[in-house]
Length: 488
Image (cartoon, rainbow, N blue to C red; front, side, top):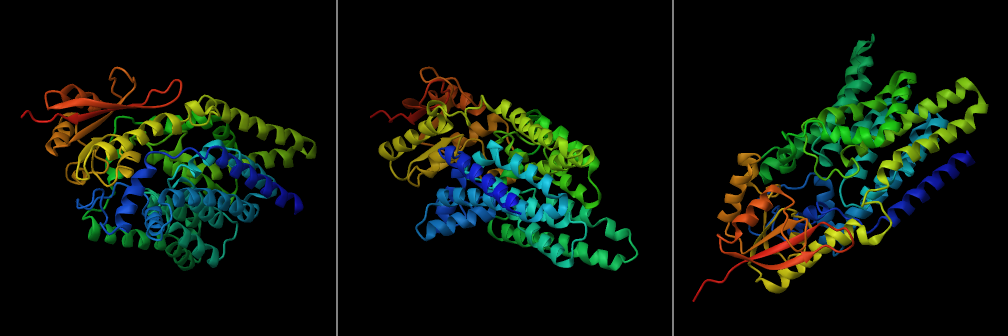
């Protein structure tokens, strides 16, 4: 027992230490939710721009509401999101320590804790400001409650309540909840006491359905639609398997051993693979956006880690205690193998001059500062990476060139570049902020930025400023074009 607590303590310390080491990272999309939350707390409503049309450009209503409440009482919205992320990571490790032994045994739990605590992308996205770690916590708790060999009705009810939070954390939340519920309780429907099985299924699946109905009712009342903008923006892309294959490449060693764990799994232990299978299906045709280090699949990592633990525990049991050191060594090698593809990532390198925060965020902070200093409060500007700059623009009206935060996308769906360009100019912006890979000569990062740059001069815009990303090798700079003054 002391060893288990020592293992847990070490896991928590390592995870929190990694989160502290990576604390400078905040993803740009996290600032999107901040802008919505602050507008709501300031009394403007559920809007992207004060006085604008109700819009849902974020994908996690629960985090959004927490940030709005935090801003209302004078706390930092982005700080609240990051605290929730780190706390969820610690809670995840505690939940695995408490619930996993009754599902996979102590050896497998220790392996799972190790692979989870030491996996750097989890710590990175814990401080990133999005819902990744809360989603991982809720998914893992529900799966472990239902994967027990003999879950009682209180376990089923608890799992249903936890699954009911998933729709409020991610658009695909209900699909994950129903998949886990149906697979876990399917065996009970073919037994003699089918009535009891139906009651259990109704408990564990019914609660997330009710939760989704409540959410959709609110969506209809507030926004007039059923799907958040992100679901429309990311679906139907030409990148059919990009999200899935990125995860397979980065996590290949763990995935291979997890498959071995699935082979030796028995009974309800197989429920551990369900979230990953659902995410694999859901990733097909999904835009690879805000998916650094396979963020999309990270909520499934703890369950995969426990399946790896099952494979290691099986080897130890079958081959005897002499292989225990070898099993531990194999786990360490797995961690090393998984970490190797991450070593060249700018997001994880220790050198601060190439960190995301000093390259991209540095340019964005400077662009927001320029807007506040050089444009009136009622100025209108457009930008593709519509996160930190709009959030720190001092309340100026922002046009999202990618349409993620535009109510228009609900009526038209994703638009081709030509129509987006017409939409931007039709809103009569005072400033265009375009992303360039080169600080001295414009080299657009996005197709719409390239098109806007080509047509800026004929439309009466001139280059006013370049907000340069900082650091050696930085290829992210913001060219700021201002509408030229009319001739006297």
